[in-house]
Length: 91
Image (cartoon, rainbow, N blue to C red; front, top):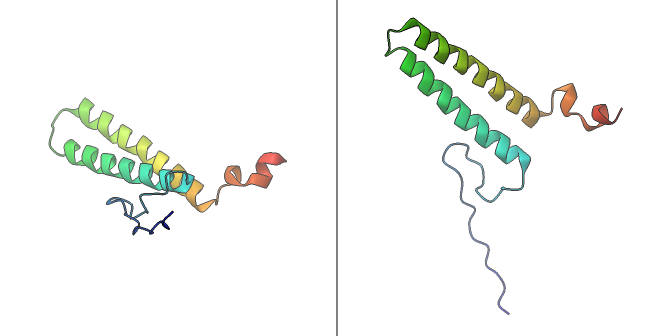
């Protein structure tokens, strides 16, 4: 049996993470954060192109909600929220 040669790790374009980290929750948190950030940018760009006030309000509100999700993913990644501390959950 021949030894396996280690192939260079591919990196995702949006996060720079190694593509093979599919079992790492931090990888997924970063990936979703990047996707949400792109969606926020897209929505805010669209707001500037439309004159309807209800549409603007809806897209701005959605962008703010997604911004909260990005913050939650970053807190998870940094483990700086009380809820993400394993000992806090067990007490």
